[in-house]
Length: 479
Ligand code: SF4
Image: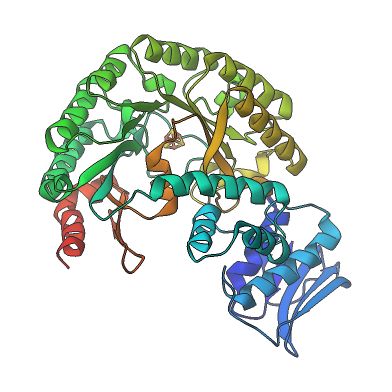
């Protein structure tokens, strides 16, 4: 399909078109196209207008008066009304009930908490989301429930409490949907020791600053930290133990890929006092696991999970992704039944997003993503199972280009919320990050301001420019 935007709100219009034309080629053009669907968004006589043509013939026009604009609490009001116009026009021909309406932001719960903070009542927020953004009751209630859990945790934040993130950007193979800073370990085996040297140098340079604070959470993510070999993995945990004081709340280590887990690494995680680990099946269906390029099957995931239990790791998160290559609700039922038997402490349910930097994006033509209706059903299955597993939703976020414009939700058993995940979403705490591709966020409460220090993504650049990465953080600290 083709589209043309005749004002400055190009991204906003595109975000709505992508909701309805997920997985299809969407092409911006300058002239009206006489073939296929053509969507035109423009402003005329103080109106936002959206006209849709099919094979050159006008089939729908929607318009909304924008002559009396006020700034809206959620975003620029003009942008909202333009999105609404395009949304209503497309809905005439694509009859899909989008669960979040025209809300396309990544952190709906953060916004809700800010509105609560400003004194809005829960009922006002519900009405705002329903009337102005067309979100469904189900999603509004989910977001408000989660916002309340998060609020309860972030209310204890203060400027002397921080979290730490450490990134290990290596994986044994690259999953088809991946867009993270992650590099195939086999191509970097010679650089890993050098990488750890730089990581240690970066931590040492910030050691006095971070240890002068209360460190609430440490999170080692990636990539897949457990993809390091046993001695390198032990060295990583030793660097952390030697230089960063014990976190007061939690210490999470991602061991996402079952094919990287060994008994020795699990023993190390336990002896270095990790309080939470993550082992992620994504799906329990072997056929899908092969299609998405993971190096393990269900059997290896189960072995890794049981081994972790044997080594005394009693807070395990499992991630799954809905919508993977040709999966249907029955496949998700299979995955959830298996996970229920394992009884992990938390479960993170992602809906597939097709990221520009992923292999999936390049191969989208030959890939068959799950349909909107299947996604709806699969989300319901995971929600029901989470309930049966005595879990409640505690954090959520959304991404661009998700099938059906749904959401990612973290569920956990009572009292086992991952605080780090909540801090990342709410952005109300300083998070100092180390490693290639890691972004530090300095939060200034008085001004409600975040200053970011970015580390370069490439491993080679990170190693070559480590002093600059350190300096970027020190500059903000010394301001
Ligand atoms: S395990 Fe995670 S970081 Fe590694 S390739 Fe797969 S999606 Fe990317």
